[in-house]
Length: 83
Image 1 (tube, rainbow, N blue to C red):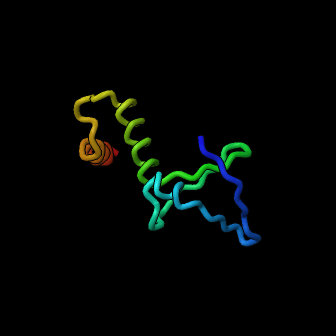
Image 2: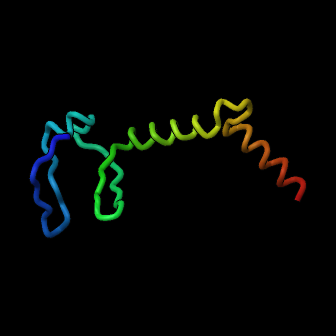
């Protein structure tokens, strides 16, 4: 792990070194997700968050046939008609 000392301004801004931004594909800026876990602040790219969510979904669904958004929405419509 690479670590540097940084500074957070009074307004809450922090600058990330270019080598860090390049390493995660943010050399020209971009949106990120900032998470607080305990006393630890994590900054992740949107792509990383999406990749993790997709991996978790694949693990949970385990390749079950019919486990698609379209199938889910169709089932919800069928359920709504029964109500």
